[in-house]
Image (cartoon, rainbow, N blue to C red; front, side, top):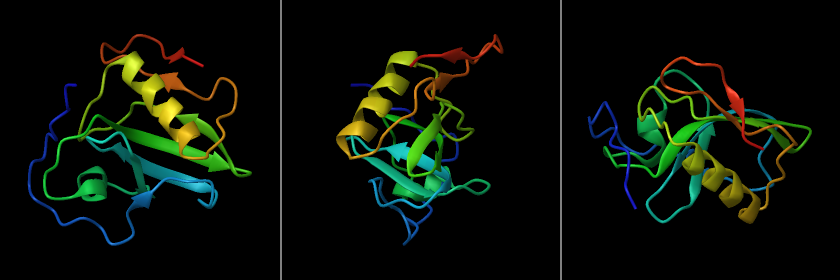
Length: 124
């Protein structure tokens, strides 16, 4: 298993509102980080929040953002400036883990944005 190192390695403390994603999340935009055990953690999205989801400069299996509306994940991507994840298989693994954690993902809601700027791809 390879991990993404944060581009900003400053040891920010873990935000006290960081939590494991589950079906009780309210509708809204979230930054997510998948820890080295595979669990997906979230915080309400805001600028430069990814390093504070796990905190202390920890590496991640994957990170980006997701959008929940009507209790369903309508969009999960690989867009993180801090971790810059660029592996489609990793994003699919995040989607699978979110389902294991009790969330539902809308069809065509898993979207991968290639680092080379080519058009986004719907993975699932």
